[in-house]
Length: 132
Length: 132
Length: 132
Length: 132
Image (cartoon, rainbow over all chains, first blue to last red; front, side):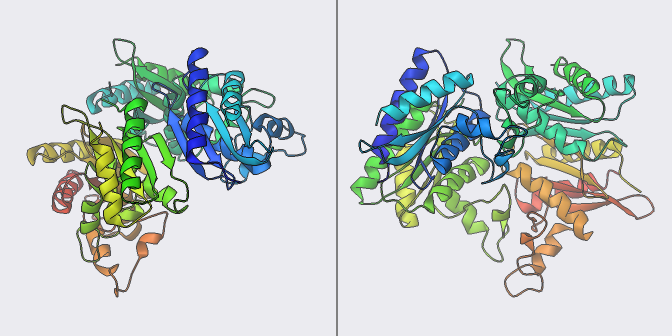
């Protein structure tokens, strides 16, 4: 019920290929069902500050079993989850974090990507999550 | 590819002169390409709370290789990077952090200034960054 | 002067092979010259608590440009560096962290391994560091 | 009753000269009477992990108005201050932190030095503290 290192490495390899295809330099994190780091890679020249953001996106996606951008829609001023980012040692709630499911549809981990526009980050995370 | 202490001290000296010229009391931080502290100076009478802000501005500018104010425009409610400040142990995303480049245009560090209005903070940081 | 992702992945792949050869399950971290994460892998079934230890070992090895076990010899009660572990957000000073050098002998990063005995951890880290 | 930036810079300049004279690369921190950073400099090639240690040594020296090594003698297993290092966000209690006094003998701040043997660290800190 938990992502393996081989699966996580496959997700990162696929995400890296997608990143290169759209000319972006990404930090890519994969966490397991326990929201703990399984694999990570920072592409050469990727923003240093995106390292922590990619980790937080992956954790946020698994913490709530949804894409991070959905959490971010609810965490705006006046929203039902306003400032939820203060929990869990810091969440990142804009797009780029996506749950990873096995063939049965069970969530076995999550991927977080950061280093470009949030649209690009999400595109690359989506590609990585679908590699499993 | 990394700023030297002599360069960092020159940036701080230039920033201090600019601060005096506009009658402001500043905290001034210079970090290297790895976002680690190289030099720091707090002018007599400068706000104590600006100490940490100047450090976080310098780090933020290097984390994303851009002026901190640009990040702040995107991190507003409804913006694509809303609440990015929760990453990396706390970012500061209003003006006053500026990357430092060598003569080849490569980023070798960053400077962060805090102690006055954000316009003044940016002006002083800009002066410091151009001393290299 | 900084390790690349390709080099970091090669170090992790070599370390994993060595770990399998000695029947150990390891967490393996590679940091760059700025002590920032470049790549990470947790082998299936590896201790969860060793995740953070492998990161701290890699950082400690780069923070002081030496094998972590050497720091640990000096940080014992009565030693010259007693309780140095309280710095830098927490150091790990027993064996398993090793600097990584390029062919010119310059330090370009470090590797940290945790998941078995400290002797095994060091053996695997050493193997990974020599892959570059 | 508080150290000025000019005094702190003089202490750092003197400490740097002493460090060069004994062929050491140091991180040097000066804090004020409130234990807050006034000035900092990291010499080119100095250990990255000594950055935080130099800051903690300066703070520790001012927190208790004594050389850090004296605290360290009392913090050993069985000692009266055993594991005092857990307080204040982390103390460093081996030599290299020294209070700074004005001409009246009043403590106006402290200096912390890290980057070599603890004997060398203390020698350089002592030189810096006497520059005032």
